[in-house]
Image (cartoon, rainbow, N blue to C red):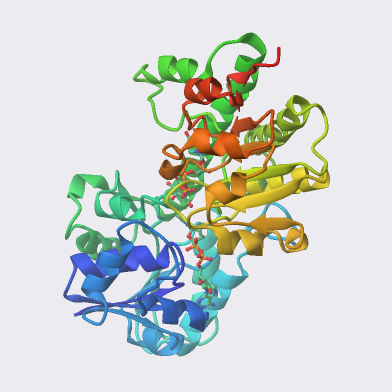
Length: 456
Ligand code: NAD
Ligand code: UGA
């Protein structure tokens, strides 16, 4: 029986390993973490992350061939394959601060693996890492006196939160990078065979390690770039009375462009897009490639511009003063169907609204607890309210920041009746029926369409 250990029981480690365990009953999978609370939650009825369909996948394999543990050393020692799926945030100190990846968690894992192993192992980079990290890791793993052989593979994860289970069950592709040596190719084949249990072989791509590492950063950069591109156009649409939804549809039907990731929004959030692009910028700069570095940096700058532009529009349309006004923020998660609030555009929006001394009330079906952690400095200034009707009561405006499906079906007449007038809706996701809202009496602003007003 092949034994897998995965270090890191987060948004990636938990779901990916649960899927492998579900699909491969004869592979034993143990997910370990230093965070005891997280491990306990994976074994409980309330999983540590909200992800549609995840409960059933975990339940099916838990205790059969899927285990969660805090005994990191034992799981490493027993394993034939060690996935490393720890966090790789942006470095906040020293060389490369604000851009480079903080590799301390990854390196600690490599040292631990080297220290406790008593047999050869395949080490799989599941975390997103700068190109050529495998080289540094191999040096750590093979340093000093150690007779063991560690073959490092890169197997980046492409799942998106909110659709993780569907993405894992039926991925566009799986990418496995390995060295072009006999032991490298043997390790690649071992991992290919595991994925081939449920994914057709044509969709399992193999590459050299560096290409696999770089493909992950590149994929995220391209996706984020599309969002920034359409958001740049949304600003121009507002200035010219073009409608961004129509532009997006018109260009997306060109098969060379494609329809996905062209939804104008308040900006992209999530733990990875910004971090991975900044990492790409840092990599380009460290290889002396200033023009490519500046090119990618602009994608992030455009995103920040879009978030700030949204707040400025709120302020301008609400007669240049929001001090003391109650503003209901509908949605704090960085996208729908997740409770994750990391790098959510809502954070900057709330901070900027708070700086204008607005009274903010945040509502979200899944992310309120995480939202509280994101803004510790504002915790006394912001109200958190599960019920959107109560959040909107007496408010001057609603700012819709997450496209939760349930926000489409709220009784907006009831909400309008309970609000201060003129009542505004600022739709940061182009999610609601703007004509219907306008009919009710709302002043309606939306991204790429601008303000529809009864007051002009
Ligand atoms: P996460 O923060 O949710 O999980 C990482 C876990 O690793 C944490 O629980 C932490 O306690 C644990 N950890 C850190 N150091 C450890 C150590 N030395 N020993 C044991 N456990 C340790 O992060 P995540 O969102 O799962 O992301 C993990 C990696 O996957 C990152 O590199 C990220 O860029 C990448 N990624 C994330 C996503 C996503 O949707 N979140 C998708 C694709 C790739
Ligand atoms: C993204 C990628 O889609 C995954 O392939 C990748 O594995 C992952 O990053 C990662 O490396 O962490 P994720 O961040 O979970 O996944 O979610 P996305 O669906 O990509 O959305 C990211 C952000 O862009 C969200 O805030 C979303 O609302 C926004 N977005 C997305 C738009 O504003 N417009 C769009 O058209 C699409």
